Image 1: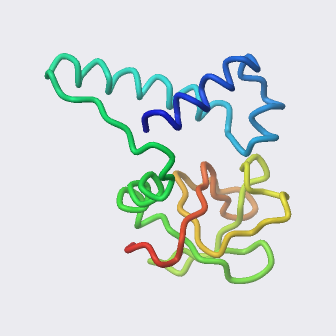
Image 2: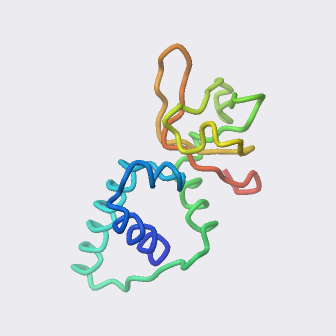
Image 3: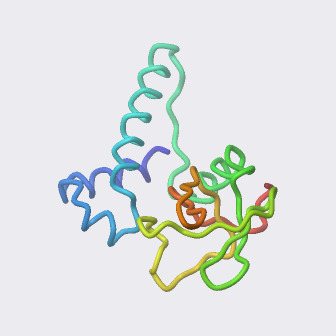
Length: 136
């Protein structure tokens, strides 16, 4: 993830990873901390294997396309107000209230999610907005 993630981490570090800052910037605080841990593990492995470390810079589409390729089976499209439908199974699902995209006035047409939480409805957590033109 390179410079873009490092920049987000630096800004977040300056704000002491406050939940308020993360929410205002559409970042899930716990996910950011986990991403830092995974990134460090990947950097350590790459150093041990003498691999070149590179970055995609500010090209967020590369990151979103990577997420889509990994989570294509957990992609959903907007069906109605606040309701999405899984693109493989057709199952209705909703943004979880703790999602950074929930209640922000912007409802992306396509998303991918990391997990579903089953309560009174099926709620998607760890959601990323993606372009519908990506190859799912």
